[in-house]
Length: 265
Image (cartoon, rainbow, N blue to C red; front, side, top):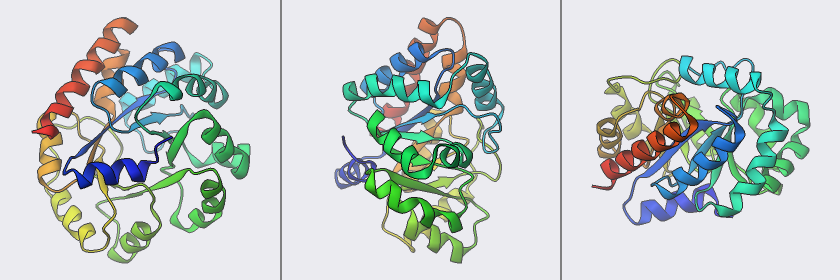
């Protein structure tokens, strides 16, 4: 199983920008999620972020919230997601980063949670509501399971806190490009370029930019501004939910290839 950091560093050494698509597990169903992971893996994804549906997704915009609600209504639980991932992950080249909130981690028990997601084939995790002050509680269990914890920074994060988060984040630093929730936007704030530069002065860890990126031109802009990875969520989730599952899978393949092409130029 390839680690997130080794994947990111390998791409950076070759002067390439990583593409990290996000999908919500269980929307429209777990069979489609399994197929989507394999399609993204062969269509240009370097790392795949897999969202575990949650009842109170504070960091997510309307598209991903709606997807999580539908998945929960279909009965999707963490257990089902891990069962599906365990079957699919051996077929994937791309490392899987789970996106989940802190409560499910605590509910399952920290040690058990990390052991279980590692056994299913995950390489990393993003917990958007995990306070920096709580990270230390998770690091030993994550390390024992070879899971890397990716931390987020925002446009409003003060410099001292930026430094602390950068020091703790594993795999890459997840730079949230907007003040607010996930979602498709027509324009990415120019402040992101300053933030990338600021982070470069603090750390040599890879930087991934997400929230608000939905188009190939935006992905290319992030790469030109110095991002090591572009993270695209709502655009994939929206396409996968439209029409039949077959149409959704075809749509995400087209988007993935176009995004990869934009950052491979």
